[in-house]
Amino acid sequence: MANSMARSFLQVAATEEVASPLRVVQIEGLVILKIIKHCKEFSPALVTGQLLGLDVGSVLEVTNCFPFPIREEDEEIEADGANYQLEMMRCLREVNVDNNTVGWYQSTILGSYQTVELIETFMNYQENIRRCVCIIYDPSRSNQGVLALKALKLSDSFMELYRANSFTGEKLREKNLSWVDIFEEIPIKVANSALISAFMTELESDTPVTQCDYDRLQLSTTPYMERNMEFLIECMDDLSMEQQKFQFYYRSLSRQQAQQQAWLQKRRSENMARKAVGEEPLPEEDPSNPIFKPIPEPSRLESFLITNQIANYCNQINGVAGQSFNRLYLMKSLHDK
Amino acid sequence: MAASKHTVLQFNAPSTASLSAKVHPLVILNICDCYVRRPDQAERVIGTLLGSVLPDGTVDVCNSYAVPHTESSEQVALDIEYHHNMLVSHQKVNPKEVIVGWYSTGLGVKGGSALIHDFYSREVPNPVHLTVDTGFRNGEGTIKAYVSVNLALGDLQLAAQFQKIPLDLRMLEAERLGLDILKTTAVDKLPNDLEGMEVTMERLLALIDDVYKYVDDVVEGRVAADNSIGRFIADTVASLPKLSPPAFDKLVNDSLQDQLLLLYLSSIIRTQLGLAEKLNTAADQIL
Image 1 (cartoon, each protein chain N blue to C red):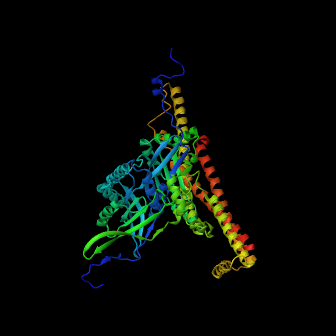
Image 2: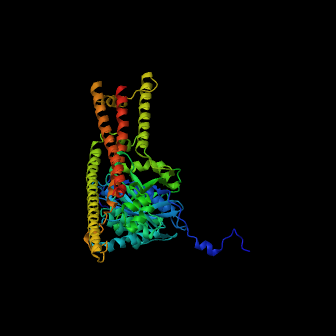
Image 3: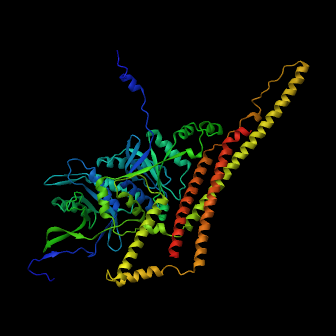
């Protein structure tokens, strides 16, 4: 007699909640300013900090953040760091700030942030929090007049693979995973309370041109491009080293297979000889023979990360080159007038 | 002033007559945020200002945090332990930030503020008191800074007068970038390189148009000529480098070619990456 529309309580409890995919990260202006200030103060050193906020539907709201002190490599400072975090969270709770960790932020230089540590930190966070995001800020690009803020997340398929710790070619082909799929970039939206925007409109300076316009119109980009190219070249070197590792692996694999074939042939001929004499044939496989030991396949993780890095540099170069084109044409037309 | 039998009301002027304060917009945002999040029964928010004192005497306010307090008509109680804890935590990150004063929301200085100011002056010699009017009572959000000046009658301390000091809102270049975004309540996405470029060029165009119109007006006699502006304009036009057209063209073309070279290089690298990846993952099938 149960209504087919209504589900029993048991059924509802049994169906797992499907998390809606994260589509947008909504950051408050306050957080952006804090991140900018913190990263700028300590540049060129790299700094990190914690993000606090709320997880609402398909939007991840980041409402506050606090910076981490720079940690030296010391055992006892580890406990200190955890204490600092707890203390900050407790204090912020008292002033009604959402003390719900939703991720962390870090600064980077010229976009070179794809390292194994990043992935490891992600995995650590993911164990405790269902959805976390990492915000990358690049203070060196603000000299170009660009607000280089990115929100990253590891893609789910990559995380599964990482947990299984297997990056062999087959698995990757199965999942159809390529280096583009490791990190997912999530669009950022900025939201502000009405009070803040009222104040900001008030405080806005009256000059029609701001400093960032001067930065953008600057003609010389050579130092920035040079550094970008340097990093790019280093990465290419790393990539070619990884390629060589693969080559070595494949060569040894094929050599091993050839050896196996040769051995097998020998065994078979031996067996034929034995049969002729009437003795027991020897088994065709011999696991104790070192030729049959499978060679471990090198992990592809490093090469993926490096590839990502290189792609990033290329993107940056493209962006800056586009800007330079604009500037040069502008100069040209101004001069012609 | 010779000491005489008459008791004279003395104003002890602050030691640096040119004391002024510079405030980063982050502090204002922080204060607004704390105000929005305040517990329901509190009317205003009180907190500590962190920063540094520059060598010429100006106070540079970089950061702030709210301190829970209870206020009634007679007395004010501040959570001192919380204040110390937050201070210690903040100093772990940035040891150079010290207490430079305190803030409260609401227009004007209230009676209880003197007590709080007293407390803060025990921590730091000359604290700055910042008021941020979140109620917009004057039709605008007024932000004022005060230092306390002691009014003494002979040897007796009569009262402390809050004297206004000039306030300057300062920001870093990077923050200025962010400020554009902050002005509206919501922005759908952060501008990327080319869009920002577009905005800048539009602004430049507007500027040039303005100057053009001004010069036109002056020539036609509609606006009185201002010599200093005229000189500025002449200087700007003269600062364009005097290159002959072919030399200039060569310069521009060279730069263009450099950029094109870099673009080409990056495209090649991307193709290489694509190839390498195909080879890596497909290699198993070759064997």
